[in-house]
Length: 289
Length: 241
Image (cartoon, rainbow over all chains, first blue to last red; front, side, top):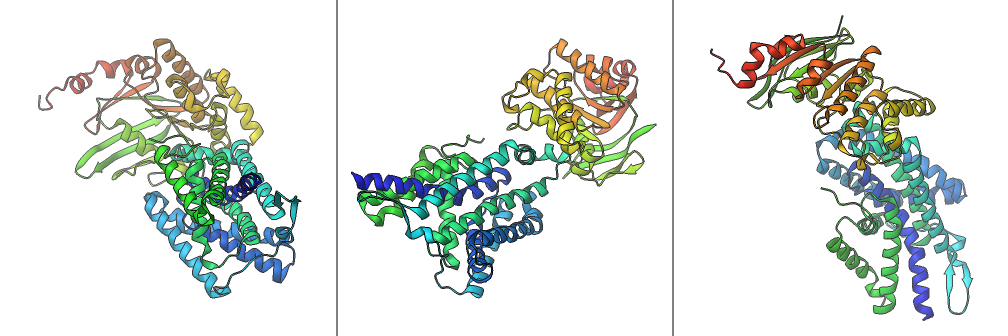
């Protein structure tokens, strides 16, 4: 009995991390209709940056994250302005391919610079248990991931729903031509959107780096997690990613409990396929024509 | 004085020559009605004027500058506003926010100024009670009103109307006519495509008839509607006669 409760708690906490992994991808898809294949690699790039700054240069994880976010914002602004915006009017495929190219470049640049070894960002909390009873324990690292994940999604929702900047993003998403005619520079808005998404990916990169080991080719693995979260929660629905992340975490941990840890990953994908079959638009997104 | 002058405007989609040669001038604070049978190219002409389509030939001169190659965004900034035949407001924004977008981006207002202007405009178009409703949930008339409101908020010098009165009742049409009159007094010029002839007779200064990609006749509304050319166009009389 306690073991099931333990699985549920860990699943929910893991779900918070999954949400922050997926939310940037959901945002980019919701606003630009672009499937950002480089999402996972951008995340891992941020992991490497944060590791480099934290361990070699500034010695402080928070400062390192701040510098990483600034660098990643500049990088994503450049990617959107000089690569994606050039082709975005030509339909969905060219920008998909551009992002595929970005993904390959990042992965190989990381191998070139950092080598293929496993890395991790040291985190004193990952070995500390917040709650440590004989039956149930809660890992400090997982709890922090969950809190940060939920906070990131909520802040992002606030920016999109309540600020004037968010209003221009929503206007662009709902009728790009109309927004353009009213004097909204929609390509600039797209660049800001990718920046927002990559900022969340940078935070996710730090959390992943502190929780698991990473190496240059881990990006696609988290891309698939992000896909899972977004498909379950609903493409473009930010609140949905929170629910999608938690559901995915629960399914993985509970299947590990009932069928053995070998089933953990595959159960997640099966769940994703089931959702795709019965509700293709995801749980929280509205169906599109 | 002409605020907009269009000459030799033509566009072809492959071998389909939708506009062959359209010429007209729009004077300041003038309401120019555009009529014509289906397929005459009225909406296509509006799309070219807005910058959605690039003409294959011809030029558009706006306040003395050639704007034929300018983008949608540039024209929006220069004072073009437009409504669509099928209204397409920002569905995930409330009516109030829709108008705000027009004010902040189209007119470069501060958020506070855009807010009070948005309230004024919603009052004018009669949508104030529904300010908080998402545009996607509004009915057809309200959507049409909202589109006018959004275009208004961008402080346009030229408004392009594509069948704003279509599908509205007589009293609703009168409301729209009143809005047009008021804006005209504020210095806005209009190009107004419409099938509802009452609006053309009462609301416009001049009417132009488009047919087969050309401006067939242009002049005072009553004269144009009664003209031989217009009845030929609408009754499909043989051109050789």
